[in-house]
Image (cartoon, rainbow, N blue to C red; front, side):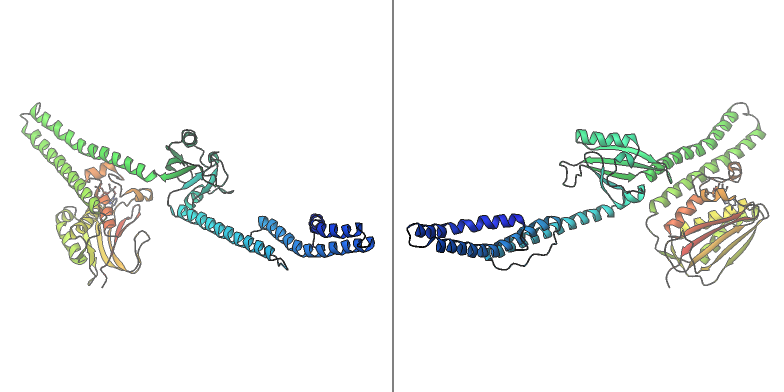
Length: 466
Ligand code: ADP
């Protein structure tokens, strides 16, 4: 009784009175026809009521426990089921409720697993991704988006305007929602490093249960835009490089056809200059063709085993004329028994041809150039893989290169001193070719220089495993 609420007590009175009525009617009827004394009849009525109340009470207590259990389940789906004492019906009701609770728990676990796998899928996408509700607020975001926007209070619940402040993106999101169609926009994030993103905004055909109505997928376009710009710059630079000698050759042809027609001395001089310019154009075209050939093959790793000692020796011999012309002393120091390199012999000899010719050119007349090859136990950070590798250095003792130019030396047509490079017959492509070839060989190029003391260009190449 102590466990019963006032509502239950009221129910008890109501439930016990109904079943007592037939017995009470019979007892009172008997008293009315004098077959039973009034006192006896009333005592019997009271006894019937008490017996009925006890009977109802035991069952009602069980039902009351079930009602309280059902109320508790709303707040706590893991609430323990109550112990019942008597009623088989109450027991069946409880079993039904427990089965229902298990079904809900299974459904809830399934929904949780589904939500988690959806989040895992979103998190595994490399591009930033948001799900927005109809009011443009973030419902969820993937790991890439969280990392990109690094907002202190998190992304969930924020208006898109608090995340991407670009009006073009916000307008595109509004249009996507209002007109139920896919929209796109481009925006730039200035910090920490400027990046340009494309945003693809797709409305869902029906709003999801969690409120998701819009998908915003971002794609970093910085690299592609940079490549486009570089390609356009490259075409402009290459045309410019070719136009200059061509204009000079055309100029001399006109002079030779006109004013200097009969001037034998001028003719000799001009023809010599024209030959030099034509050679410059040939070198430029050769280098451009090499570069495009190397770029085409850059992703396939060469498979030949190349003996670097022999290759370096041949390359130096081929440059003998230029070395002698500039009266350069070449110190050749290649360790014996070096392991072979997995490579393309033609490309590798082009690498060392370009580096040695640069050292000869920029090292100054009567300078000294050291060519050294040895094994190295460590690889530079820019080289992929681990383990020992071949380290081949070309060192000169010329003017050297100021620190700020070093990172840009391998860009096409980048020259520290334009006039000097042209005067020495440079195309501005030699080091770009070196970089692409070392990349194809999974190697690395490291440049070290002190102004006034010279420069060292070191190529690291993976050795064939022995
Ligand atoms: P170039 O045909 O002009 O020599 P490269 O691509 O071979 O083109 O070299 C790019 C620039 O790097 C050169 O113009 C020069 O300014 C600088 N450079 C290359 N090698 C050396 C070196 N050994 N010493 C000083 N500067 C160098």
